[in-house]
Length: 245
Image (cartoon, rainbow, N blue to C red; front, side, top):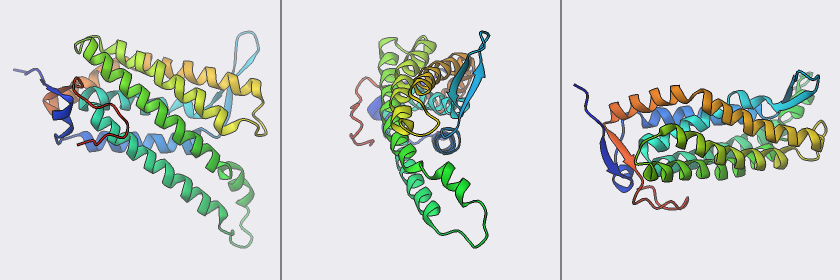
């Protein structure tokens, strides 16, 4: 006989140790880093029925997974644990920026032909990562805050409303902040294309959330069943700078 997860409040949840939390956090940070350093640098396009080419950032194919995992983190483990993961991602992005700067700056071995291509791909990584950090920080905290608040408002019902609703807000901030800060004024990124990418990123990311809602239900249900609790942030301090314990 299955038992319903026990409802606990956010402050109690913040003090708990969970079985699968570390694995979920590792998946979140891995996807965050890979989608930002590999996918974000390349614009791609699809041809619409009217023949128009609609541009989008290649990272949009994978980056929304991090937002879905962020939804799972907040829904299952509460805002305090999600806040800890967001700051972990922040630290990882910062180190990635430092590592990219060091590696690009090192002189290449004699006759190595890849330096120019390497600099083209990673040479602007400082700007990409600064934009990533700011957009990630604002977008993820907005996403987590909206989801946690909506969970309390809905009494834990209608999970789809808060996963989609929080994504609309969080991804909106993320796309609007990241692409202009990262690529405005660079060769290959004219303003009209940049706005296309911003809008398409927001729409595609939100669409991904909608399409993967059934999977989100399965993962959330499985984790809540295994962890045995359901965290409600009724008494949580939502400041990004508050102690997570």
